[in-house]
Image (cartoon, rainbow, N blue to C red; front, side, top):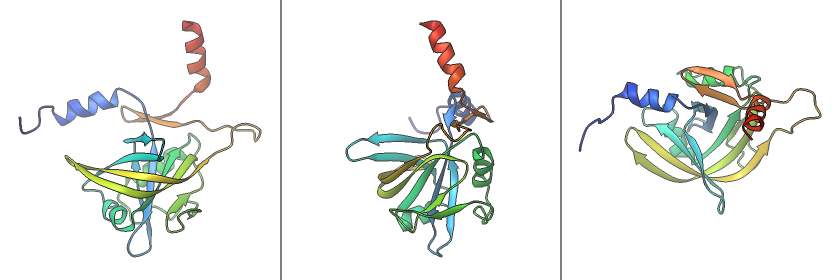
Length: 183
């Protein structure tokens, strides 16, 4: 059966019903300038080798840079500072990095890594690109992983989630209490 079996609104409502983690994917364009986009469609693929999957809209202005550079970083956003990053990188500006704190990657120097508003990041080498409808599935080999240390420094960060058009922090204490109440 060809064509759209599900209306775009129903598709968005279905996937919007569940909160998802929010990430920013970054890379470097052929002009040497960093670029990126906000993403909530990503997943672990394999432990050995360590692979992840990122879904990129075929119309994304970042996609050509990803395919050309063959490297990227996936940043899991934190509740403190992550929402502003998510909003900036969701836009179409050519100046997304103008106000961001970033540096070249440790394992992949040409890969821009965001420093603030991030819970964790991984530097990846592109292994495979698979067309899938109006998106492209990019499979990356994780070359390096960094996670923010928890506790001891005062304020712990929580994952930034997105659901039905709203950003919210994941409240681990409330989730733990709810699970304990059910037990």
